[in-house]
Image 1 (cartoon, helix red, strand yellow):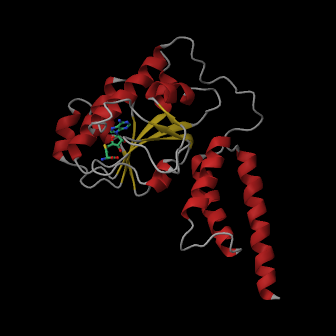
Image 2: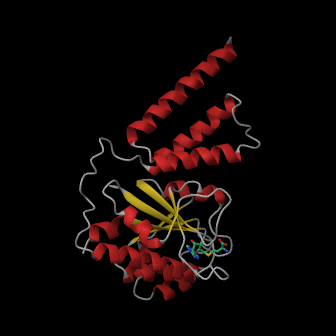
Image 3: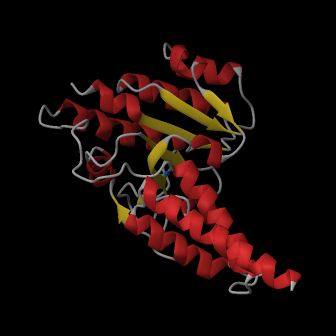
Length: 250
Ligand code: SAH
């Protein structure tokens, strides 16, 4: 049993409305041997209904980390997976739970792996999905594709356990790459910096930047930046910022 892999998977519930779903997710996780639960700005939490639905998984619930933003929830991760019940406008690599989990277990990923789950009524926003490298869709009846939130967590947690049970998985082996993959928090800060600089040089219109920035995000998520690459890009942006400031002063 590869418990180390299960320990690295972070289930992130974004803006959950019903406390019962938080409890149900905690239970689903504990059944599968997982414990890293992050709650991004939940509507009602802590709540009796969450504790009741967690049943004997109250330790997972009590250990849940409550944060204000998705950005905080993905710090310390080198892969961010967004779950989605439907197709989005700009297509992202879309995989089923088994394929996503297999990719997550690749030796390239040495840090935590975040899997984001959306709001009961509206799912994840396009901005949140654009922070992810992979989109996970649970194959369903196309006419009725939306699972209950805790049920979706259960399906994904089950796939994590099935993979962890394979004796052959070597999750801690070095990947053969010379640099570790970048922390998702640092990648987010780089995107924010890039958006500011690109607006400053009038490459994008801050009032209407959406498509170009989303496509840049998709490109970088396809590449999977390492630590050094993020630092080179930040250095480039800093130089551009300085040149712009000098130009303005002249
Ligand atoms: N009406 C929303 C559905 C939200 S369901 C929408 O159209 O997006 C709540 C959450 O459960 C989703 O954000 C997702 O995290 C998860 N979920 C539900 N069904 C899913 C599916 N078929 N595949 C992947 N995730 C799913």
